[in-house]
Image 1 (cartoon, rainbow, N blue to C red):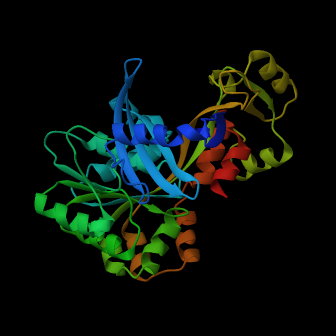
Image 2: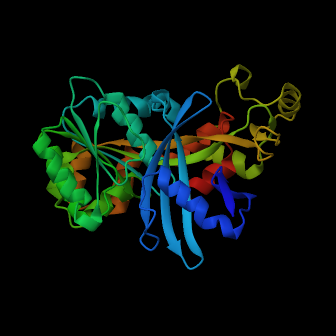
Length: 375
């Protein structure tokens, strides 16, 4: 069975006769430089193809099952234009915080989020933004998902004992200005990353985490010395992905009572005149909603372009926490989550939920999708 994952939902496309299974998988393994004689161990490979004047990197993974091998092909467009910070939906304030951290010659920038929250793509966009001739950048990845010219990309191989922590230690002998670790899976990798940052390098990495504050607590709970975290950490980005409303079928409508209440709690009722916004839905629905004197929201009606889903593409919602002296003191004291939250409240910190609701208020996504992503 051949299935495509469209908007993170698997959709069946076709079925290949069982007697052709081995031939099809064998051909895929051949062009992705895998060992065709081995069927029991999992394998990974890589294909580079040009389709309609667009270059694609295709990552291939095989896993043995009781019914034969399963193959997954991950298609990624090979385009430098893809790696732009402006495409991720950062607010101007959050973007400035991130750029300030990237402009430093040392420190630890950490991106936190669950699986499928765009952490890896965000890391590549940061590397591409900092990729200039005067800087030597080395990344430790497992596997290398996107190839970027001018960056030394190292692939981990745990079966040979070459782990993320070993990779980070090894690249220090290469004298890089910037190091990237695609994932911080354990305490050893986290400690090595903090020590590398303290040695005068800029380190960028990602970690599975709920939000910025819980990420600090997770590092402390891993057993990393508080002084290492406080001294090295410069910026944490909490991130999720939410679907974009399909513009061709966008439609304005009055917000529900629950949506209006959420906007009111987060002071998002009074926004700039929506007539000046491009995503107000079709004009007739906008006028009708305005007459109702209620807060207007936008939802996709469904069309052929969005496969009748009402959504096309994704955008990030973020919270960016810049580590200052007061926060460092809290880290050194191993403060509780409640104390960290008090710090955020005192500093009027804008959370991911606020950023998502702001995008829903602007007609970019919907409140339901934001709540699903954040909760």
